[in-house]
View 1 (cartoon, rainbow, N blue to C red):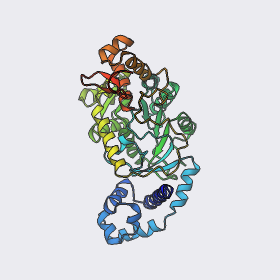
View 2: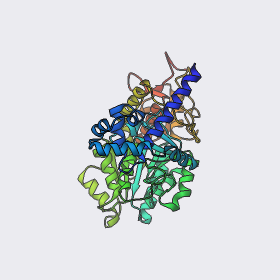
View 3: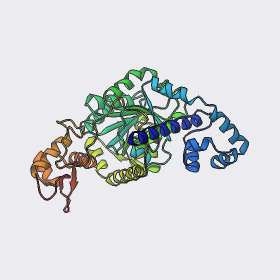
Length: 420
């Protein structure tokens, strides 16, 4: 019976993917209209069976337009799109699927589906976006790479847009440090942009990261697609950091989206005082909606203040899964080490997918040795600054390895009634 139930669930999900793509492949139907159809009828399969009058009400359009939408959707070649996505090593992940990123789902206007290459991390990730100018100076490139390396060394995921300049340096810096990075593309998987970064995107996936897009496979670069891409970057990240941006900059818009639409934090790296390329960063700092940061310690302080966002996203995800989320459509081609369920002993760093020489691994070892430790005690034991410790302990809390005791000290989460 269990096998039959799994097969039925898988079949239902495949049907939902086809139905969602059938609508998405129609010109003029995007994530917003997909969401209205799902919310109105409970599923995209159900929406395909509805009358033009019902669809017109859901889409807030006239019945004649709704009738054309239904005719086009029922004739759309969704199976061909699924095959095209798969041919480029990607898969379709729907909103509500068990691997859909929880931080992105918690935001406004989240994509209804994603085409994904590589490994998604559904539980909330300790993630920072690093974005900036495509025409970056040597200074800007150096700062983006330095920040990405420092954060990746602390097991922070780096999110960016795969563009020339700052974005590319952020991705490369994360990989040089052996870290995880996610590139959010504005185009379809068959038309990666910029084309000269195709090898970079392949390297990101091979290194355990991911490339994601909400666009059908054949969509090429158009100016209006990049602001849509930017909202996904902001939604995946707890903090958005801008490195080198002029006054009219898409990177600044990404940071503003993070603040205004997602309730997340934004920061800017200052540039030379006379640099036109950093005028936008300096203005954002002066206006007060972005913090000034000069390195990983500053960003980690901001991450430590994001605990409520992480907890809210995690609870939203748990509620969704309790309500019956869909399983992944296909097995991941680049799976990450799964996070373990609570066990009689505290999980090892290998169980959590953490390198043995990572900050989180060092902190976990110190907590295990001290049995219970606050930040002051960890600071004395390891000789680190508090921001570095805060990021590591937050990551360990997210992964279920440690918890805060009654007096606020960290202890192994699996310990009951005393230390091991």
